[in-house]
Length: 454
Image (cartoon, rainbow, N blue to C red; front, side, top):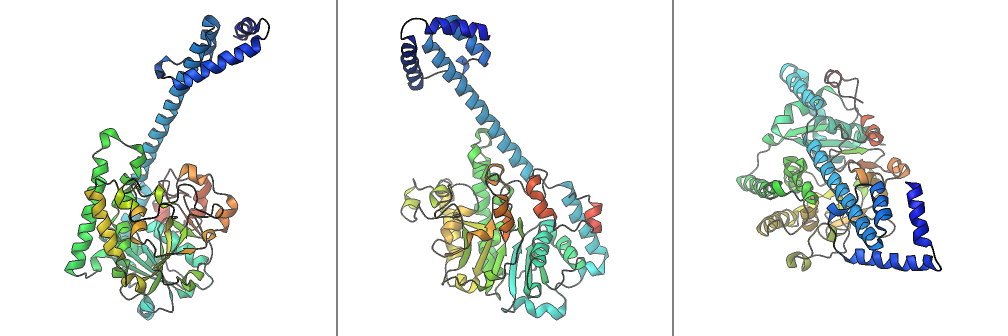
């Protein structure tokens, strides 16, 4: 092949000033190819084939068009492969590992046969702490027993004053027995843990109707994307993720109603790990705001790329354009300080419900899929910034997580496995999984029986 190319090269470059002439001809050919349309199928199948055609035809214009078609064909293949990878990851994120399913079943059985697994949480002598504002109250809304145990364990182990911590875990009816059994039989030293099932709340008819309406609206929004399955928009897979229909995630907007006796809390997602003491969060002055959160602004002095309102909301829609600032920086949901008294004086929850309906009425065109965009709208102007070094996020996204330095990861008080690659799934990244598994109690008999791996 080299000899043929060398021979062709001699013919191309022979004669006076041929190199300049060739350069001009090649430039013209490339510009024509750049401006012209090509059929991907006309591209060469390999580099050898491309060289062969060049040697035979010695036509620079044909060579330029053939090269363009070949590159276009390769780009299409790469794009298709990435789309397929997104679909596979999306499907993998839906699955509940057999080991976690086993853990829930074993714990539910323990709840049924072991009186200790049904013991009161917390024990009566600590019940007063559940509403005592002098303690540090943390809220988790989750149906994942193992994830909840990691959040609680990591927070307690890294706290300067664990005896001040009070955890309020809310779960659904099907997980309640398992969640209660775990924390009843795995004593958390110093801290207090409360486990409540949604079926234990005695809400008013008005509250029940509002929650039901919100769930129905979210389901219709989800169905809007799901019905497009035959012509999938791969950028909208976020809308079809399990979290989009998760009852526990959607109930975040009702936290003041879930905890009517609490004044100030720290909310944590169940896919976080607390690596250092976070007691400073309860001392944070929110300056009259409802919430404190980390903004995606650790990239120098402004928003990180892809983190402005314009990246979440559709500013080509007049309703969004006329109501919000496209340059405003988005915040992260994984860790938040919430002043529930201030929240109760606002219409945040009503605003959230209103915009969900509007998005549905406008064919889901107001924002990109996900749980964050409607929350950005509801809390707009009500979020006080928390030091961005406290939280590292995106550990569940393949490409985003690669940009995180080990130094920032280890220094962060809280790390957040946002994205499809949760650490308890097989698709979780090994390089980050150890940050999570170090807080799993592998000596526990149920963990061993269900073969939950390190």
